[in-house]
Length: 283
Image (cartoon, rainbow, N blue to C red; front, side, top):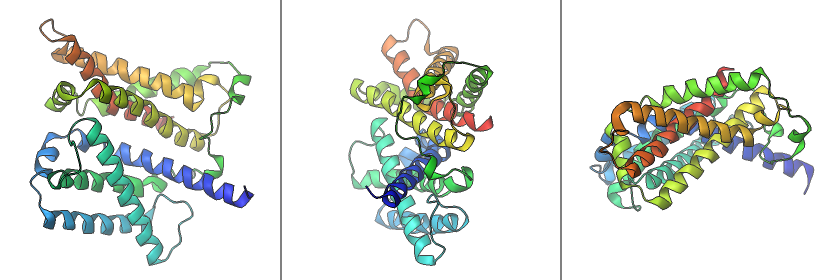
């Protein structure tokens, strides 16, 4: 493959990583909001069109300020196509997460309002990505999982700083939804298959956000700070924080079925994993 093509591909992949990270950090609270689910079902075609127009317009303003492609042009058509890309990604991401947590079951007219409303918020997070992760360059992409990190096996104080920041981030994000009925509702209706998908999504999201943040702070030679390994202990921290919160809030009482208790932990661990990964930004 030609070197310039390979570099362009790396930049595109890294821009997508930044977009996903920005979308989830920005949009996770609304994904777990019952009022949005219910209100979204009441919107008709006119509201859907209004959402799309608002989405494209809002993202055009955001792409003028930031955008998620590091190599975007400055013309109005460049901003338009960038905003359309952000909208498409936001809609796709919101549809995937809403389907996994059971808020939608198929792409029906009554579900479009939920997807578009959630997609509006997530697309703004995507367009905000370059501003949030300013200075991160695609040519430092670490999407490939090489084994050079095995050259060093030295956990230092940075490891404990990162665990502390992960706990802080997990608490900040999960406390927004932990006391609400949404966690119980999702936990009670999510299937075993989707529960496994949600756990896989938690690891994938943690890895993507940590990859972006690692590029920002520079690569580490410590095995524990490699994004793949780091994502594992971030998810572990998210599950631990979620367990403590769920138990503290009363879901651990003897009259509660263990299925609901365990499901609630995994459900709450999704925003916790996003927060734990984003907590790395404070270091």
